[in-house]
Length: 577
Image 1: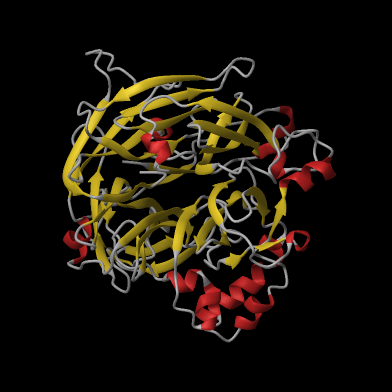
Image 2: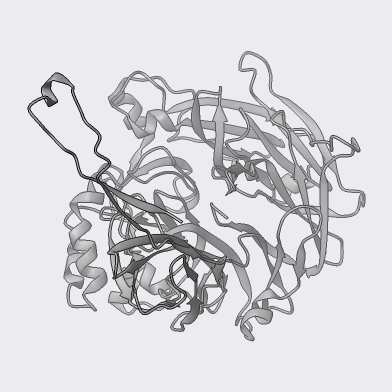
């Protein structure tokens, strides 16, 4: 039992001389010690338009009484990084969870002894439990019908489902599948008013020839915004057409290529994509085809290097100062229910940005280039653009193509230079290699070369030919790049049709530990009948397969979900779990 002492100090003129007489005049009374014990509370995010209730019922004990007549209660819920809102005054609290709740929910419970005016506090965290927070989604074509499968979890034992969409929602997709898109960082709360507590939703795009589905990646229910809402100009014009070629999201932006046109949205919470136009010096408007794009991760200003297949060239795109300058406009548009759409069409700050010539940028910055980005070889076929670490000093955008002689043409762009073109003498078009391919070159001749890279590796990328995976190592810049066999699928008649890292730049953190998903390489392997499995390789920093420390066996996982005719696959993840 605690006791509270009140000292009655006796003073005199001798105090300054450090003389003190203890007369033992103490007054004290007992403290009612209140203890709050809470349980572990979790929730699952409900579908769009629905809610769930969680009863928060902590145990309260007192040392001086067993009743509760002397107690008063107050519940607060954190609404942003600094603000709390009072939500209840009972001994228990019914927490209402909506489809927008995807992060930890912080509650503060205060119990006051009204007799002694003593307050005891307890902070309670209600944590979300997400399905698919480490999940490969596999898009299949079954009789011209889109079917979404999944390989959920990590390690050797996972949940493999042939048709996860039907299992979770009871529905099926309409139309023939064309591809997948992923944006793991669709911000739901305002970046400026609450910068330190981001709340993200995962957008999963499932694209067919009849419908571009935009799903919540945690529930597989329709997201609150559909495709036309993201590509807002289509909504304004009543344009129901769609042809999504790619959808890629990072913390800085969301990029969507629709029928060759680049659309981009800022990392705010409004989800408004604007179109990128050509520099007037290049003809202006939309005389380009963004066949591939490599997104930048360095700056707040979203940027891309794109391959323009119509002009057979690389172009650079950056949304510069429109993030802050146009923020109020975008908020008014998003909240205006159509009343402020004129702000979108006027686009006072050129929010979509401009596609410019990299060669002209180099000339104006007076920096050299390792290749001419305006004039690529006429027989080139571009296969891939992605991210790569370069010389352990900067992030690079990597572009890989091949020519009619079965050579790999490899281009490197320095993202540090592109993010700050006025600083230093860094080259934008930094390096170029011409590499003789190894393996079954029929993949090159057919124009289908699976390629993958990530920031985990220093000037290393991977490609698949037949049933084999090869590593291309360009880390020794003064030497000829090496091409080495990394993995061979046991069935020689099978073919690796798709290849991706779990992430090329981000990671998952669990209990303070990084999972290093940038070195987990996923493969789709199909036999002659279209039957497919997913193979996952864990790679070392040198690009070799990691071996188990105890068994010395290579760490290779194979998952058979009765997948058929895989069109695309992607890894969906939540950054913190």
